[in-house]
Amino acid sequence: MHPLLRDARALEHSIIEWRRTIHANPELSFQEYQTSAFIQQQLAGMGIPFHVLAGTGVVAHIGSGDRCVALRADIDALPIQEETDLPFASKNPGVMHACGHDAHTAMLLGAAQILKNREQTLNGVVKLIFQPGEEKVPGGASIMIREGVLEDPVPEMIFGQHVNPAASVGNAAFVPGRMMASADELYWTIHGKSGHAAQPHLAVDPIIVAAHLITQLQTVVSRTLNPFEPGVLSVTSIHGGTVTNIIPETVEMKGTLRSMDLGWREHAIGLIEEYSRSLATAMGAQCEATVLRGYPPLINDDNATSFATDAARSLIGAPSVTPFEPKMWGEDFAYYAQKIPACFWMLGVRSPERDETPGLHNCKFVIDEDALPIGTALMVNAALERIG
Image (cartoon, rainbow, N blue to C red; front, side, top):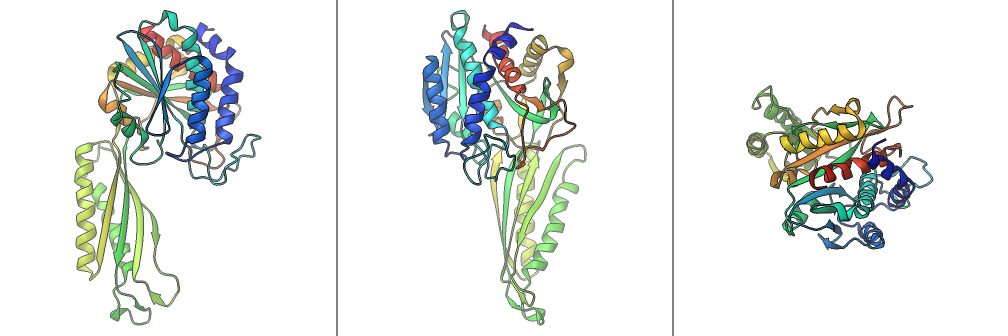
């Protein structure tokens, strides 16, 4: 067994306890006060200096020197009612760590302890970033960056990881270049003219307008995007009317736009706004379309990914390191990747005894905790291989 895996296994009990404590006390984006205090308490107990950014974010430093590498974990939870029946299930109604950020945080705390134990051998600084608000636009990463998380010192590379319930424990998956999509939120309010359903000629039906708009919006992808490029436009919510015999005054819709290309993304946003306005006008209605710009595409640096992949192979063996198929998910780690060379990888957390497990953002989402020491060691190894 690799020495770092042995070190992580020796900390396994603590890492699991940290994860379970955080899991039982989840907090929503930018409200992670108890979680932040817990992280600070653990770092203080390890003798690791830290400071607070973005309200609840924590940044710690281990080592000294001109060189620097950064490791990042997100700390927020989701507005989901947990249904796992775990003994350490969420104590907070309607809030759950359904995306594995509890595991991310616990593994970075484990990495902190191992790195602190090796501090005298470091040839630089390892910056540990415990970041709030990954699940909510504008994303905690953007705020942390604005408040100087990538300064004093400037990391030469940054690494992050995300639990992957589609892969079994022991697997780590990497992809250079495009990994995840931009993620924008779409909101529409269609204003018509209410009237009796038996006299539609005296009303302006916003439901009919919404139906036509949903159909036309599909052409934003199908007729303006190169078929060899990925893109998604989904209308995911529509609400209008309350009874069977009244045409409503308004209809509200919500959706998402996903893209890997920033240029087409802006073009698509322009088309969404134009189609929404012009179609509604043509049908005698009005439409307010609001686009809340989310995270940019996550683009892994080729050199950083090659480096991190080689480091993972040296730790867990080449057969356990596999390619990752890019997804149209969104991830605010993308903001770091826009600033400095970055690599984000996926960590298998499915029990080998199970063919499948509930996916991310699912009320029944669980992980196999045997993955925690592996993820901890992967983070430490990437840092040490860079500046150790």
